[in-house]
Amino acid sequence: MSETDNLGALIADVSHLLRRAFDERARDIGVSRPQWRVLTMLRRHEGINQGGLAELIEVEPITLCRMVDRLQEADLVERRADPADRRAWRLFLTDHARRLLEDMRPLALGLFEDAMAGLSSAEQEGLIRALARVRTNLSRRAPQEMRVHG
Image 1 (cartoon, helix red, strand yellow):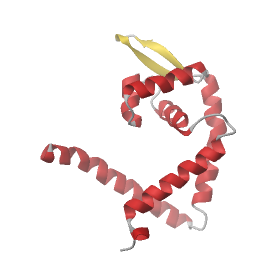
Image 2: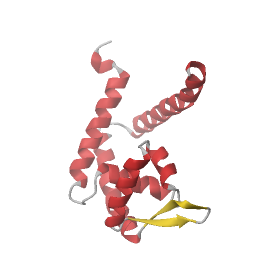
Image 3: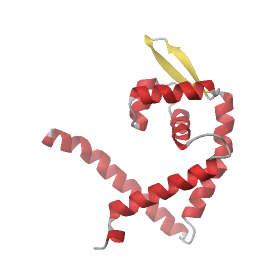
Image 4: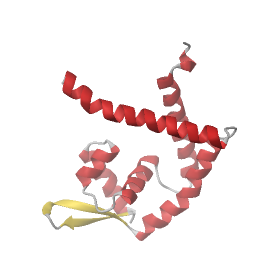
């Protein structure tokens, strides 16, 4: 098997190229890819606390705290006190963030259209299903392996 046939290397290359292409396209909007990731995850889990969001995007809590500080300064995220825990903050998108995410949606869709160029609808659906299955397989396996080896 050649290096180009290695699934892990191929997925890593595609991921790197997608990130780079996204950064180039998003530069004019004024938001970085990590910020966009926080905003999109927050849209799906609005009202989550900072620790929970850090886990979802797989960053250290202090890293997320700094990112949220910058997003709050840019009027994209609002921190609200958690009524159940005086030490915790719940995170919410601002109206400005919602508009920004809507502006970025065509950018992301265009990127994926470019990435899928030359693939039939059936091939695109098959690729997405296959990658989703790989993700599920790896997500399920990780905790089991930790119990066996940890």
